Image 1 (cartoon, rainbow, N blue to C red):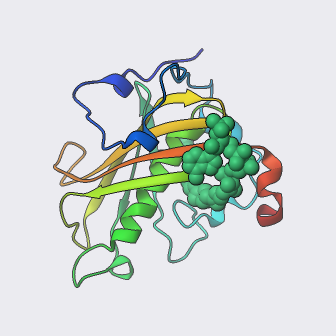
Image 2 (image 1 turned 90 degrees about the vertical axis):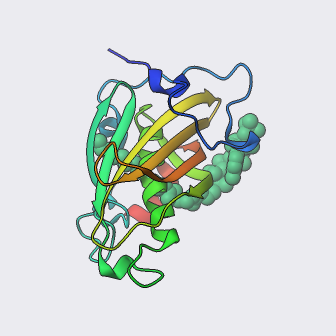
Length: 183
Ligand SMILES: CCCCCCCCCCCCCC(=O)SCCNC(=O)CCNC(=O)[C@H](O)C(C)(C)COP(=O)(O)OP(=O)(O)OC[C@H]1O[C@@H](n2cnc3c(N)ncnc32)[C@H](O)[C@@H]1OP(=O)(O)O
């Protein structure tokens, strides 16, 4: 069974996408694979070392992947002091990493393996150390090997104010792409 992410075209979710992260005319509507990202992840050795979500990455973000609702991938992480940029606040690069992870996860829900080709971020509000950051991401279209994805990060709860918005293009790659790093 597959499901289509209706949030992709929701007028309530205006994205930050530029022309380079907007699906071209004729792009396919994303169809999520049965089993989602788990199917593609199953063959990916070394993933527990992922700086975004790996449990072996001591100083990583340890992003906790949540569920998928109506085609929207959810996950969250807690900002620790080692993620700090300006005193007391999360580093922008750390937040970009979190968005990369969330948007990548939304692409992997299509059932293939993807790497980041382009990532755009808009920072709307500072995120303090100690904050729980709630991430959402969804695919807006597929064009050949390219998956167009958007997302947002909120603080103060899953429906709190948006702190970061992001859009990206993820490129489908074969499993062999990862072998030198993952073996
Ligand atoms: C439930 C649990 C869930 C858990 C989920 C966790 C998931 C994991 C999340 C992980 C998250 C973290 C993820 C990470 O951190 S991934 C790590 C960061 N990214 C990389 O390392 C990628 C480095 N780049 C490459 O390896 C190659 O350049 C790739 C493979 C991308 C393309 O080289 P390749 O030789 O294979 O392909 P091609 O050049 O023929 O291009 C093919 C098509 O792609 C288009 N294109 C190419 N580049 C770009 C670009 N920059 N922007 C826009 N489009 C681009 C190109 O125009 C063409 O389109 P078209 O002409 O056909 O129309």
